[in-house]
Amino acid sequence: MSMPSKMRHRGSNAVALVLLLCAAYGLSGCPGKVAPQWRDEIMRQDADREPPAAVRAAQARVRREPTSADAHTALAALYAQQGLPGLALAEFQAALNYDPEYVPAILGCAGVAVDHGDVQRALRLYRRAVLVRPNHPLAHHNLAQIHLSRRDFAAAEEEFETATELDPRNKDVWLGLITACLQGGRPERALRYAEQALRLLGDLSEIHANCGAALEALGKYAEAEEHYRTALRVAPTDPLPMNNLAYLYASTGRKPAEALRLARQATALGPHNAAFLDTLGYVLYRQRRCRSAAATLEEAKSLRPSSGVVRYHLGLVREALGEANEAAAELRIAVRLEPNAPWARDAERRRRRQSSVASGQ
Image (tube, rainbow, N blue to C red; front, side, top):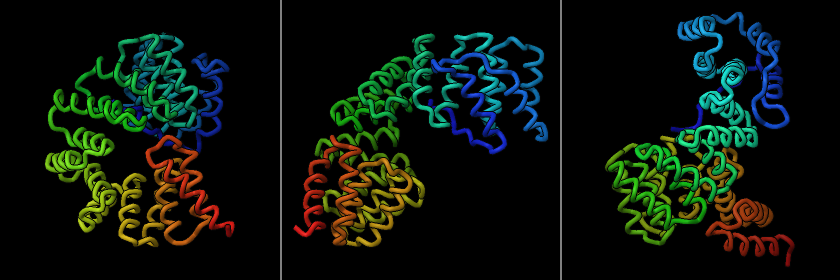
């Protein structure tokens, strides 16, 4: 299972949500009591909205079972689905007031923290959930996701591995484990896990695509291509293997027309995916269509400014366009973001050269 779904924040709840977060977490980052006036205030702000039947039924259950942590958590989940994170947090916290070790409510509070960018508090809450329920696979999975977002790949791998042991038929935990290994620069381990997942779960497009990515990182390009093509046979409209195969062709200088077709098809299916736009930009760069590549990579950068590989590719394009200052700036940022990436040494070498060009040396 994945992290709790994104809860869209409504403007009418802005101040109350901040107050709720402060009251709920306190200085320690662990849930405490939510002041009743904050919950009442949010209730008043949303009083003009007629709640759906499911919400009304859950509210009625809470009135019947006011001390039930499960009842409050069920209502909180419905509020979250309605895009009301303040009300959701109030009910999650009410559940914890009655049962401080009720893991679904702890995970709910952590999900609100994640959705509002408070990664440190989410980390503490997920750790608390794991401590309370060490055999809860979702708690380990979500904790691993936090570690992955913090680029703590070893910790992410450990938590994902625990999640696969607890829930071995959940493809999402396997994908997370493989991703942690790939991003952590350990393609051998990624390949081992991917092959294990294929044996256990059968032919899944996403697993084949990640297996191909591990083989590509190991320089086994023919085997990687085979897995990407298998993934496309299993799921012909899956943009991930399209994207990966396009990048493989571009990086090895093979089948340029097919690389461009696949990259464009992937971005059409995922127009706001920075990784897909990055691949399309790189394909265009390799075909010396640098103006189009620059525009595409700038779009990818706007979607994911913290991606080192996007900044590296944009630096390559700026270098090809003769824009030395811009190239040096992008390459410098790329190395700072991902100093251990396979391309980092090349990026640093090019940065020095472009800096010299820019200074007239």
